[in-house]
Image (cartoon, rainbow, N blue to C red; front, side):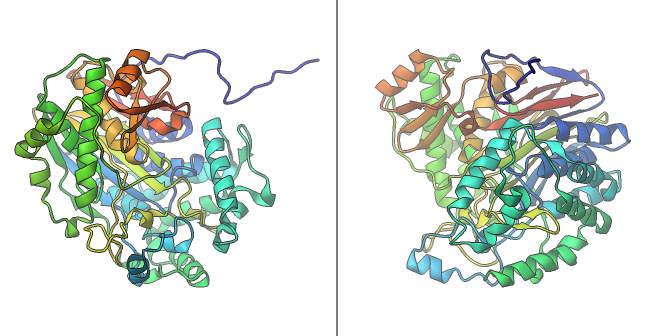
Amino acid sequence: MGKLTYQADAFHYASRREVVVGKKGMVATSHPLAAQVGLDLLKQGGNVVDAAIGTAAALTVVEPGSNGIGGDSFSLLWKDKQLHGLNASGPSPAALDAEKYVKDETMFPQFGINAVTVPGVPAGWVELSKKHGKLPLNEVLEPAARLAEEGFALTATVARSFKRTYDRLGKEKEKYPELATWFDVFSPGEQLPKALDIIKLPGHAKGLRAIGRTAGQAFYNGPIGEAIDAFSRTYGGTLRLKDLKQYKPEWVEPISIDYKGFKVWEMPPNGQGIVALMALNTLKQLPNTPRGMPETVHKQIEAIKQAFADGNLVIADSRDMRVSKKDLLSEEYAKARADEMGQEAALAEPGIRDASGTVYLAAADSDGNMISYIQSNYMGFGSGIVIPEYGVSLNNRAVGFSLEEGHANVLAPGKRPFNTIIPGFLTQNDQPVGPFGVMGGHMQPQGHLQVIQGMIDYQQNPQDALDAPRWQWVSGRKVLVEPSMPVSIIEELRRRGHEVSVELDKGQFGRGQVIVKRENGVYVGGTEPRTDGSIAVW
């Protein structure tokens, strides 16, 4: 008798998604199990903050190739009739020896213990829960702990991230012996998990429960922190328990621009959200052109290049910024940049590249509270280090520093690096419209621009705005486009000097979620078709 075979990543037909609607609550993210965790917490009496934390914790389990307990997070929370921003990104260790890298112009390590900055994710969960949550943190983290303990089936998307990291770290193991911990946890016996395999992460469950039980103290001043300190000392790192003890996330004032009757909100630097605002501000100065026209795409690309060229010069830890946010977002600056834009492709260089090691979620509850939340280990599994006993996969966010002496973002001890992760939020007339985000390295502000213009300029619903063919400016005049991009646009972009390549890897174009609140209180959600995007609704 024959049996059904199932290839998790083989598709022969185009698929179409509808918008999702609901009234009592909604959670949109890149994995269905994580979205369901958040919705269950809403049904148990939790609010949007509890749902976001529970979903985020579950994402560290079911999408470990994109984020982890040892990463960073940023949040934009609409609650109590105002927008709150929480920066939970960490600084470099206080004992970091920056001089040997900056003076000698040595390539900064992408992997290993010296690429790690102080993790902010657990502190962000604690701060959100303490100030704005309803349920005890241990209850909020328990569903994710159970997922890790009982096991879950690997999706094709997540399996691909395992394979990329397996190949990448395999080439670095000799140079960085500490990377053996990744293989011990995620590929025991050198057996790489495949799509539809069930994996269990008992150490991860233990770590989550310790964080929940102690309100984060186990991580920042207890056994998990002590294990990180010991690991760092063993492998010649500078990260110490003292760095963890001193860390506190920071409540910040979100930044915004007025865009055609709406306010578009981002987090201030050290994140790159200001790049999206700068580009939108420039485009606002130019005549609107129809959706799907080559001229429209050309202007978007040129505006993003201008914004990155300036942003990469000045974005740094907020304490080290030498150009004010106000000046970068001024109408005068935007008009000057718009006047410089020509009909041909110009040159500009971004300073940051990574491989989509990020997860994003949007959530809403029955009281009208909404959150835009993003967390990341940076390059996939980050540094490649896992603290096995507690399942803590550590970031490699220090790679975001510049090694150029005198640069605002130059590598230094006790300093937060340029950070790629950015949540977005939209308001109108001082009322919330909703959270949005597109994750994926320096694609993120580019994705924000494309989705926001789709919804505001071209009246696309959230799902349509996410489904639309995307482009990504890479460097110089190089642009990647999806296969669904019309040939007429590709040909005209090339005529204007853009070096356009059709990219088959859908992971190059980011992964987004959007929730919009209508005047009657109904939530309308869109989720990412390029990954395991899912919306859980009540």
